[in-house]
Length: 476
Image (cartoon, rainbow, N blue to C red; front, side, top):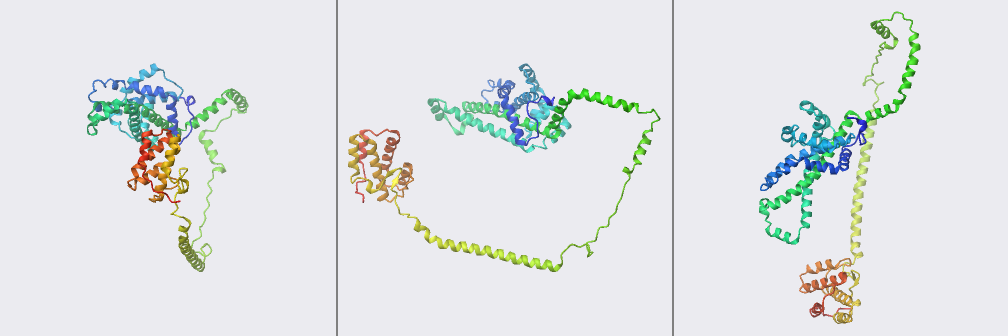
């Protein structure tokens, strides 16, 4: 492992930044990681035909063995991080090892471990076992343990959600005849007994797992790299290596200068007898720099008058009394303010209704005037005349406006100027009035004509005119 060959910026990150970096690595090699996940699980796909009548047992085997695919994804990401893009021959040789390496421990004892995104990286990349593995895991999980557990939970939830989304999306593209056949044979109580339904759901779940597992593995690997960066100081090591690379060309000149500077020092040595190491240590320790100096101080007693800094008792009592007075004044101001707000609200309350005329009727609804002054005396005759002239939209509009005016004036329906056709229809339907069914038919005809330019045929128009129930004359 050469840190200078890494293809990602090595620096201390937060846990979520580390997860994002792992997701970025998976996006960079997505198609290779996704294909590796499918290829390494080939023995599981070969069991589909023998277990075609037992889809739920096959699903159990797939869910239990899908972590083998995550091993291959981790192998690809780890090699690519340090500048090596493994060839397909290397990946093919690694696939049997992914199945056989510590199979019983990884697939039985540690299969349901909540720290799988982190523990897999420690086991696969560092090759630790036993007590060394447990000690290393305690060090790695000091940072990001909670997020590792969260990733494990998110992988399951995301796979189920994505599988449901794929299932619903796929049903949209089924022919209507097949959809109708499935709906007729669908039995919620025996859903799991229907082999076709089961294999459809299992297929969606398998595709969802292939997409989710790769990204969860990459997120765990990003957290693993970040933990090692914090623990081992990878960023500091890389900084020193960059400095060393810059000074490498100048190293020869530094050595030559050291040799030239050291030669005169060697000539200055007269060759006399050198003191022993014990004598040299004794001479150094006899220097004044190694003499221990001690000083003692006497701390003043708290009870002594000169050392006491406490204020007199009289001042304390005065300050306490002043504080009580200020507190009382503050509370009195708060109570007075609340009382003033209550009194002011009671004064303002009678004036509020006078500003709002709740009896005012709507004059314009959806841009159409619905007052009596804006309508002809005989709405039905005017509408029929407009229809005969070919102005069908205005004819429908006149009938619709006339009906709205009748509901507002005669029945006192609380239609607002901001209401839409649907709002008006709901308000009138809530009254359960005998004329409500006619208004519903007229509203449908108006909507089709106004927004789709699809006017009712002549027979339907004559039927609307014949059933017109609002014949009383409106007051101007």
